[in-house]
Amino acid sequence: MLPPVIAALPPTDQLGVLETCWRFLVLGVVQGLTEFLPISSTAHLKVVPVLLGWGDPGVAVTAVIQLGSILAVIGFFRSDLRRVLAGVVAGVRQRRWQEPDARLGLAIGLGTLPILVAGLGIKLFVPDFDRSPLRSITAIAVVSIVMALLLALAERLGSRRRLLQQVQVRDGVLVGLAQALALIPGVSRSGSTLTASLFDGWKRSDAARFSFLLGIPAISIAGLVELKDAFGQPAAGGVLPLLVGIASSALVSWLAIAWLLRFLQNHSTWWFVGYRLFFGVGLLFWVARSGG
Image (tube, rainbow, N blue to C red):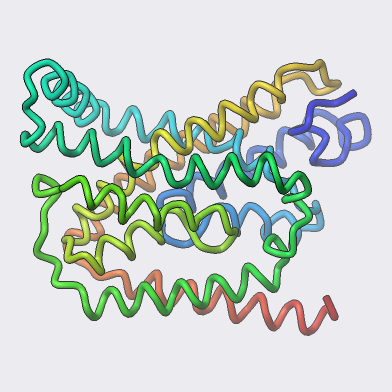
C-alpha cells in the first residue's frame, strides 16, 4: 500500500520513478514560488497539476512539500528567531514582556492558535476535505478574486506607518485570525495576513516579515503531521520523490522570500492584486469552456 502522499498522484509503477520525481519537482517549484507571495500556494498546487493533466495532488502532498518552504523561512530568519526566543525566555524569567522581541514571540504564539484550532476541526470533522466543494476550481477562482479586491482595499486604506518593532499581542490575534482563512484554497496565507496587516496600518515590508514569522509554526505542524503518514509505509518510488519536492520547494522559497522583502520596500502590492484578478477570471473562463 502506498503512502498517502505518493498515492495522491498516479502510482509509481505506472509513471516510473523519474516521472514521479519530475512531478514532485514541478510541485516543489510551484510551492516555493507561491507560498510566500500573496497569491495562494494551495490554489496553485491544486490548479497547476490539474491543468497539466495530473489531477489534484491532494492536501497531503501540499502539506509535505511545504516542509521545504519552512526550512527556507527558518534558515532565512534564523537570527530573528534567535532574538524572539531569547525575548520570550526573558519574558518568562524576568516578566519583561514589553520588550519588542518578547511581544513578537507572544504575538506569534497567540496568532498560531486560530489556524491550529480550525485545522484540527477540519481534520476531525471534515474527513473528505480533499473532495470538498471549497477545493473546486470554481471556488478557488471566486476566492482569488475576492481576496484580490480585499488586498486592493487594504492597499488603498492602509496608513503604512507601523513597524515590526511596534507589534502588540492584539496584532497576533488579528493577523492570526486572518491566517486561519488560508485553510480555504485560494485565500493565500501570506495574502490574508498581509492584507490584515495593511488594514492595521503596517508598512508593507514589515507586514510581510511578520507574515513569514507567523507562518513558521503553522506550516511546520501541518507538514510534520502529514510527513508522519507519508514515511510510515514503504512505496515503490521510495522517499526520493518527496525529497525532490521538498528540496526544490526550499530553494525556490528562499529566493522568493528574499525577492519579496526587497520588492515591498519600494513597491506596492498592486502587481499581486492584478495577478490574482487575472488568475481568478482566467480560471472561471477555463471552467466555463471545459463545461466543468
